[in-house]
Each structure stands twice: as C-alpha cells, then as structure tokens.
Image 1 (cartoon, rainbow, N blue to C red):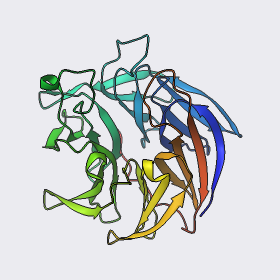
Image 2 (image 1 turned 180 degrees about the horizontal axis):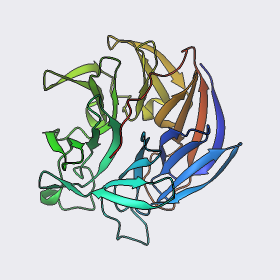
Image 3 (image 1 turned 120 degrees about the vertical axis):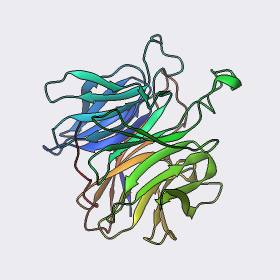
Image 4 (image 1 turned 135 degrees about the vertical axis):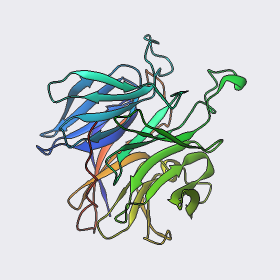
Amino acid sequence: MQGTLLASNLGFPEGPVVMPDGAIVLCDGNTGELLVWKDGAISRFADMGGSPWGALLGSDGAVYVTQGGNVPGSPDQSAVPGIQRVSSDGSIEMLATSIAGRTLAGPNDLAFGPDGRLWFTESGTEQDDRFPEDERAVGALYVLDGDGGEFLMERPDVYPNGIAFDAQGRLYWTESAAHRVCRLDGGQATTFCQLSDNHVPDGMAFAADGRLFVCTTISGGLTVLSAEGEVLEEIVLNEHATNCIFDGPALYVTATKVAEIHADQRTGSFWRVDTDASGGLPLLPGKL
C-alpha cells in the first residue's frame, strides 16, 4: 500500500474528517485552525485558536473538535482546553471545559459511541514541562452528553491518544507512551496489541473487514492490525503519521516530518494511501 503526498508545509495536522461534499477537514495544532482540503488545495475552514487535535463530523452536520489549549510558542496563550463544536453556519461553541467536576487539560481524540454519546481521550499534561510536576494533569477517558457527561477512568503515565469503536461497539484507544492499543472489556482496560518501542500509536481507523490501521508516528507510517490484534503489515510514509480516516478504499493520513508541537513549526503533511480494503467501518452517528 503506497502513499501519495497531497499537501505539505502544514503545522501539526491531525483529525481528518470526510465532509458530505468529499472535502477533508484537518486540525492544525500549531496554527489553531481547522483546514480543508478540496479540489487539490488547502484553505482555512475555521479559526479555533489554541491547539485543536481531533475532529469528528456529527449527524447534525457540525464538526466536533478536541481543543488542547495553548500550543507552545503561540503569541496567544488564552485558549482553554475543552470540547468545541463548529456549526454549519461557521459559529464556534465551547461545549465543555470540565466533566464531573474535573477540569479538562488536554482533550485529544473523539468518537461517537453506540449510545450516541461523545467519547474522548484526555492526554493530560504529565509530559508537558511547561507545568510544575505537582500540577500536571493525569491522562483519562471521558464521555460527554447532554447531561454533562461522565468520567470513565484515569490512565496515568501512558498518554491516551487515538480512539475508535469496532463493529461490535467496543471502545479502543491508543496509549502512546506505553506503545499499545487498548480495548474496554467489561468496564476494564485490556491490552489489544502491545507494540514495540519503535512504535508510538496515535490516531487510528477501522476498515470494514475488521483490520485496524494505526498511525504509529516514529515507525515512519502506519501499522495494520488484524481483528485479533496481530501486526499484519507496515505502511511506510517516512514521516510521523498522526491520524487517519477512510473514504472508500482511500485512507487519508495526516503526518509530520518533525514530531514537534510548536507554533512556528511547519513540517506537517497530508497523504492519501490507496489500500486493499473495500472501505472503512462506518463511523457511529451522534450529535450534542
């Protein structure tokens, strides 16, 4: 499976979203923008401020975004971490900055679950040296809904990152610092796949046939896992792949040459990988 470069000179791109018209919306964590790739060109979709990391299309036509807060080196340090919504009219709304009395510190990726609620990872600030060690927030999993949401569990020292649901409605997430993909089984976190130390898993997407395509950053591309969690194949881009989404057999991938989150960094890129899958597993619908 080969990759085709579609765009370069981006900041730190993640969270690709396939829009109804076929355009692809991307987060750019270094510029504070949502970008859109359409007709072979990149333009601005929305100015989110801060550092948006994940994005997801809702059944209401809105784009839901995990806002990570302040990006290092940005002249504007006023952004607050939380969950945002960009409505079809372009208006931007902050939906939540805390859940169950816990202030959000670094929401990262998000997915609607079979219950229609919005599930997301919180990477925390444990690895952010801008914060004193005794003030750093622990990684965690949360759910947001119309009643305010729910805190699921803490995941300390592992950096929860990408998130997805399989065809059986089971929750998966990546833990970048622990080099593994986890699954929620019976309310407990279990290891679905333990990767080697030269793989740092980030975003991911299920193919319709049950394979899981995982962006594994420092491996230089993506790692394809079987439905049983076995490593099947490596897709080489020679860049740090950060997140991905299917549109038919095409897998759209965000990446960066230098895995540095900094406002002036412009090494990000956007790719299409033509896979042997028939398409992606349809994402579960939802709205808030």
